[in-house]
Image (cartoon, helix red, strand yellow):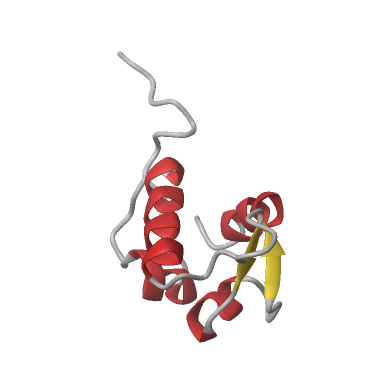
Length: 83
């Protein structure tokens, strides 16, 4: 029997994260990809420091109310929204 890699295991997003990536269970890698699609589509990457993400209202909920987070911080904050 094949075991599913921890990264490929479908996880359910919280209601806040679901507003950005959808409510369907998905692997962490796919959630991150959808998050980046959302960030690029809404031009939320900081123009001066490309490593920072500027949150809109939906992302602020995911980021614990923070207005700006680094890419690395974002990964940790998003993990809290996947079960």
